[in-house]
Length: 353
Image (cartoon, rainbow, N blue to C red; front, side, top):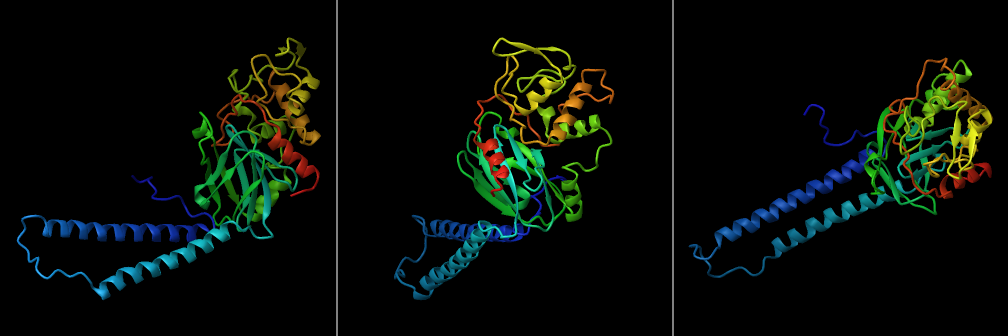
């Protein structure tokens, strides 16, 4: 019971008002339910058939009583309506100076991109404390709902159009992200985390391309980027339904769905990252999103790390499905819909928001 929390922590500025309205409505509902329930039970027992009570001269009108049970609930209802309406409008009106971040929902993961310098995250969202953040969201398959309980925000993420939600983090820390709309068999695994950082720390993290510390060599940089992009959720130590393993890949012959084959050399690895649909490994479909919007240096880092997994692995590191950020989920096989990732990439390249 020591770890049981009645409610998630209040980690955003609007969480206080949200909880105030919620708990006030709950208290009023419980109070009136108990009052009415008590009176119903009391009068049912007192005036039940056969009870010895005075039933002469019953009262049919009582002006003060009728005014009391009409005016008091009316005043309480109007107050709650005004406060609730104001809170709703505030939650749907992001400040003009909000920092915009793009979110793509897909079965069953969240893809997040910072438009400032193109930093990309999977199932993890880094944000600065005390600064309004506006999420511009779209789905590439079915309807999802981006839900951060600690911020008291949730909004549908639908295919074909952008929706948005905003918040201002008020406490540093790590808080869970959920999908609040049933979206398929692995809906419960569509989780992630939002990391609230001090503003200076966030600026440094953003300048470092999403790395907390600048890596010292190309393979280590590729390993860190591999983790940040959550590649290990699909490409683990062994082949899974989500994706083939990359362990010992370099120099091996790959067989494709179309019957062709190719040696996994530098060019093949690069093409598989940038345009994964050109050569789909036998037994798999179009699960992986294209990374053609990544800087070329990122592709070089990933290629160097993947090569190290098949050439003696000089870093001593192996792919671990459990190594990526907590809350990450594998991207299962599904039919790819290019609307989301492509839409965001084109928006960013065109300089639109």
